[in-house]
Length: 109
Image (cartoon, rainbow, N blue to C red; front, side):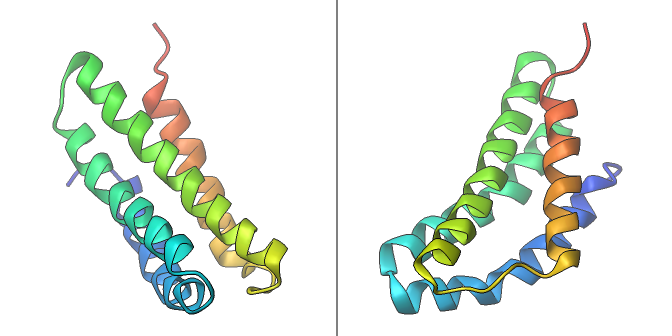
């Protein structure tokens, strides 16, 4: 895939995936929701890279929403005291993925 952010998305998935197990141990619902959103990020990013027009922006917008949802799941787990602070590298990956997806979902006209 030519889209550079896709590899970054997969790296983020690899880092977050073990935390889904931690979330599920405390709340099956939160763990499941986080897992579904985490899976959605690379799938919608990949689909968007091969879509056209409004579908392209819609897929990137879905990926963006899912990335933000995963981050919210982790922040919620932190608020409950189930997780400590995110690693700096993981936070940087979230910023990069979310920032790139914002630009892809909202291209300048």
